[in-house]
Length: 93
Image (cartoon, rainbow, N blue to C red; front, side, top):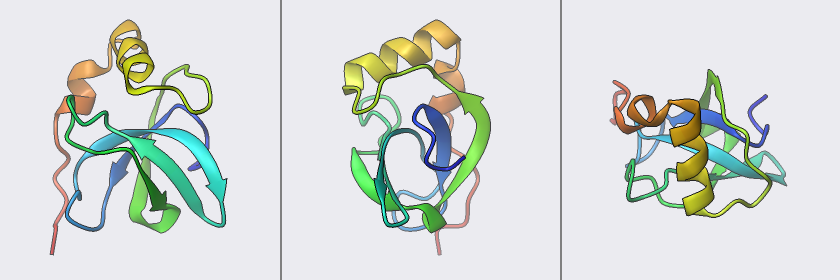
C-alpha cells in the first residue's frame, strides 16, 4: 500500500515532517519517490524510506513517474487540493 503509485502520504520524519505528498514511483529496497509538489505543499520530489511516511486513505489516478504538473491536475480533479495543502500535526523532534 505504501508503494502504490498515486497514494497520498504524510512524511513523519525529518525536516519535512507533516508535509503531505503523492507517491510517484516505487524504487525498491523500501524506498519510494514522493513529490508534494513543492509549489503546493513544500515537499520536494525525493526518494524517501517507507518507514518515514504514513499512508492516508486517499489516492489519485496518475501514471508512474508523473510530472509535478500532472500531479497537481490529478489532485484538482479529485478535489483533494485543500487536503494536501494542509500540514499534518506531526512532532518534528
